[in-house]
Every structure is written in C-alpha cells, then in structure tokens.
Image (tube, rainbow, N blue to C red; front, side, top):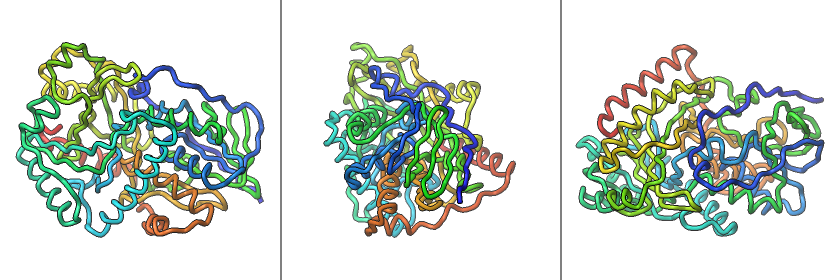
Length: 448
C-alpha cells in the first residue's frame, strides 16, 4: 500500500549567503530532469546531508547514493552560519551555554565524534586550514555581567574536567585588535570553518561516488515497497530515504507543533584595504562568541581564494514559524548590526557592509533532535538546535548507522533523547517567544 506525502512548502532564503558570495563561482551540479533509480536518497545538501552522503559512501559499497538539494549548495543555511564547530556545551536557552553536567558530558562526546568525522572529510577532500581550522574558540565579555557568565562557565568546565584558559582585556585586544572585551575564555577543542567552502569542497569530493543534483526540491513522496521522490522535473525510486532538511522536516508532515523556527542575522563587511587591516591590528583570523548567548558574535577572516580580509557581525533572533522572513525584517535588524560594528571597530569607521542575510535555525522546546525512523526506511536527521555544523554532521552520521542497523554506543546515546516536546498554541507561542528574546537582548546590554 502506498502512502503519499505532498511537501507543503519549499525553502526560501532571504538575502545572499555571505560566506558563499565571497568565494569564486562554484562548480554546478545538474538538475534532476529524468526518472532514475537509487538504493539511497539523501534529501538536503547541508552539513547533515553531506555527512550522511559520506557515511553512505564509506559503508554501502557499490549501492547507488543520490543527494537532492532544493537550491544551490551553500546558498541556504549551510552558507549562512558563523562557522563555529563547537565541542563543548552550547545551550542557547541557558544564560551561560551550560546545561546539566551528565547531559553535557554526553553532548561533548557526541560533538567530538562529529568533529572527528568532519576532520576526516577535510583531510580526505584536501581542504586548506582556513576552511577547517582546529584553532579552538574564544568567548568574550564586554560587561561585568558578561565576565561573571564567563567565570560561571569556567567553573562548569572545571567540574567537567575540561581545559580552558582565561584571558584579560590586554590579551583579548592583542588577539582581536579591539578594546571592546574586558575578559575572554579560550577552549581548545573547537574548529573554525569557512562553512560555504566546506560544503562546496565536500560535494566536489563526494561527486565521484554520490550523484548530486541541485535545484531539485522534493515536492512529493510516494512511500511503499519502493519509495518514489518527485522533483519538479524528475523522479527518484529508492529503498531508503534520509531527510536531512532540518526544520523543513515539518514541510514533509512530520513533527507537527514540535519545532521552533528561529532566524538569526549577519552582516559582512567589504574586503578591508591593507591600511584598514593595519589600523585594526590583531591576528588575521579569529572568532569571538558573546558571553551572553543573546549577544553579538564577531568573526574576522583573512583572504581565502580571493575573498579578502573581512569582518562579520551576527546578532538578533526572531521566531518565524512560517520559516520565511521579509526584506523589511532584514532592514530593521541590520541597524543593530551597524551599531554593533561601530562600537567594536571605531578604527574602521566608514567601512560598509557588503553582504547581509538571515539564516534559519531549528530548535525544539527541550533542546533535543528530531531523529529516527519516521516511516519504513525513511529516516529523519533534523533539528540541530542552533549548532548545525556539529549537530547536523552528527545526525547525518547517526541516521546512516540507524538505517544500516549498525548500533554503537554513540548511536545508543543519540537515540536516548526524548522526543521534541509539544509547543504552546499560536498566537501565544510566537508572541511570547519574540517578547522573551527582545527582553533577553535588552538584558544583554552592550554585549549586543
């Protein structure tokens, strides 16, 4: 008996994917325009989809693997995040990112497995260091309250037996070139990536073993002994399907009223001149997360593949259950970006922002993934809870292991999460969530 799923909406991204825009033109992959057969179909070409495709290429021998991307690779959320692959607890609903100790130990173990897998991809596909840089991460505080958050998080890390180093204002300035931060916290296990370059180079490396199609959104699925996935101009027949579509798992009819669709926003400067870079000083490549999760993330990247030396600021969060934002919403947010840039980089007064964008996150109320077998041989690798680089990679890996019946300690731990909790009804959900985020941003003060 066949079950038909009509996909309710397709991804729509507002503004350019800045990390992709600063790279040279990408290799294009064809659009699906015919009927084909495969053993496996991965839907989605972000971090989860690429991880699933690579895991399959390692595990299933000569079986045919197809990856369908609704748009262009690295044009969606994968090309819009800030590029932190974080190994330590990073709970956005917490004041200091920390959670319960036992849960955090499990999360660290899972995150590091995902980072190791991504490291293998970087090595296999010849990614340069500035695409995958195991340099650790910095958290910076600009206020007394922020410094207290750092001290609290450091005590939490000490209790977990994790390494860290505190930095004073002078050390933060020597690293970043700016006077903004009073205190910093360095942890060595994170990786900084150029997210769009990572996705594009992973796709190029996989293309010999995986058939990749761009501009090929799935608009309908017929589920049966052999699943049939329909795109606007073609079809794929396959036994196994992995839905690596993050929040758009709801567009396929799964997890109704269980997922939160949050947008965050970023602005990237034009390439700095040699004189501007000299006035800024500091090191050429760095990223600082805010001590308050509602604050501003800042990254500086030096020239990579002709991209130039640039500064990116990211802040503001909005809940948009429609999974879409308007140009007007972007314009309102970008005023906050200009203020954040001006207060941090007075020496770069007059440097304009060249790329501005919004990007989708998917969270659950109880910070758990949307993962598992949804229908016979249809698997979800979705809901990354604001850490798509790491948790996306992890969910893609684990979905393949689950589908192949390859149980492990990691998979057992990942399967141990409860289901995403049901959300309050509208309009209470959206009104309450957005008011709460505005209040938390106000409390963040100059950290924003």
